[in-house]
Picture: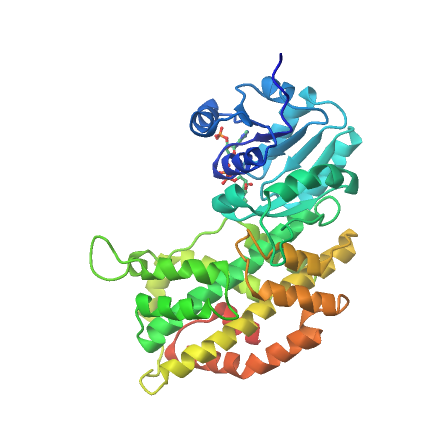
Length: 429
Ligand SMILES: NC(=O)c1ccc[n+]([C@@H]2O[C@H](COP(=O)([O-])OP(=O)(O)OC[C@H]3O[C@@H](n4cnc5c(N)ncnc54)[C@H](OP(=O)(O)O)[C@@H]3O)[C@@H](O)[C@H]2O)c1
């Protein structure tokens, strides 16, 4: 008797593809995998192969191992490689087969690919995947965009592999047509940039302004993580900051070079907002901060030329500041989300996407990098009023008004002690 065909196929077996394929296979959907460099496939199958996870050495065998209509997820490097893989695949596929791009593709590429493929009789789905390698394996947040008809076919598989939201639902929804899923994923990454930068600024102001060491700052973040700032990003900051240097004194974080890079999705989000005439200052400032961080040599030269006057922190009340910072961060993060959703609103209008903001806040509640308690508040706010911009919804307006004075105070202290607050400052502005 011949082997049963696979329900799903994954092309591209770097960290994301491997883990996503293992996730699908573990939900009883037989999954075929293929990678340009065969070694990666054989290593994956040697370690994790099973009745439901099978590897193929050639693209032809991979395609023939799939049940029709074939569902092929591409998890390769974003950009040209996606076009190359599609070009290799098409002659082997049949009309009606489905290609899903799960990488961080630029949404305009997704719109183009969807149009080109639908004209040829194929279905194309652009699916944002968030959660890094852990999320991909145990349950990511998925942001799929494409036709309603294909969503109905893919829904059982995508729901089975995605994370849980706060109410036991799944962190996946049909975001909208063509590039909508990748667009929402891009804005998600932009918000992630801003929140990470705000965390970095909080660290810096506690360190430089109040002389706190990384262990003490970790304790503060641990407390924040039990309150309204509870989130994956604050959660992971605690072990990162408290890790001691195994080869010397002090904390490891203090030995890490302060030079950040970027892969591009934050920058795309900022460019998008400028092109659409929107304001996205918190995310744009996070991109600026990364650029400045990457120019370490230049910063060293400047620091020899300029020594800004800095006030002493000795008079400041540390405990009070830590409380003010929590309130300030809450408002600043709300502003960053508000700017992200404003951009989504503009894009939805111009691209003719019917985006549901409470659903978007819901599918970010689990699996993804920006998963946070605050997303429950945002989901409720959009359910309260789906027409108004976030900052005009009454419950949000009350929260922002309540923390505004603290946000201003934190910015004043930042200026006094000489710590640049790119994002926390942009949020106040
Ligand atoms: N890493 C993350 O945390 C993360 C999170 C969310 C989304 N993403 C997105 O998910 C996608 C996959 O990410 P990743 O980090 O797992 O992998 P990656 O490093 O972005 O890409 C490596 C994969 O792409 C393949 N590839 C590159 N050029 C190719 C070409 N011309 N033809 C065929 N295959 C090609 C590689 O095959 P070979 O092995 O043959 O070189 C390998 O399988 C990307 O779009 C990424 O932006 C990543």
